[in-house]
Image (cartoon, rainbow, N blue to C red; front, side, top):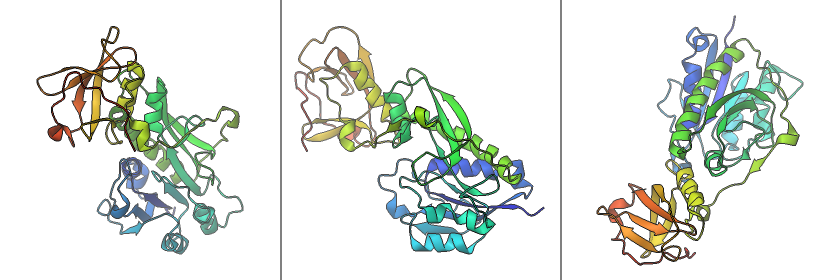
Length: 323
């Protein structure tokens, strides 16, 4: 039996995990799957990509770089080399129909996708919940106790295609974006292995999402990570934990410097001063700060800025971040 041929597009650590799951599968090892093309987001576009991964030396297959997935050479390359399945993971932009239907053209199909061919993506929520951007931070901010990764047929609408398989992950009360990212990465590897089995048999079955249950989470901006100490301490703590590495950290401004926060603890009791007031400072220059309903003890600053932070002063009131 001739091997099933696949093309892969990514530029993200979660894409690496999914591809590694495919490459480690018995089906790939036994020659039932052939990776014909590998496309990677060029490193010059890595700024602002949380979890960027460079695929240039990852496999023996030469990598084709792209700046945007709509680059003409991407479309031309996909049309030039036969593949049955196209896998796209970790891009922030929608994939156009011309690319999504490349497998259909190679397989001379009548539908955009089928069990035997198609374009496949993964998204770190249990779709149809949480379509859209920043799913890992939003999962923590929304206090979900469980989430997962969904594998689905790609369509022109974001995260809306028929579901192929889902893997669940549980969340701890102290979950951070860092720990959840790790769980989601492992789930991508698992789904990659599952997908390999389905592709090798040309039986990638699927079922439509429930549109009535669909929710969409919006894009987050840098201002969304600002710590407004007038809010309640629990909300601030969730925001800090939702924005740990590899995401842009939560922050506040002090003496003209943006202070990036990795972790904190709640101190019970009514606030002893106006919200934003520095109440105490530890020997290693970590402040406790009054919030709208309590006190937040900053326990870890980002390693990128910790060594440059000026000494915190008791009584200083941290105000609003100015544009």
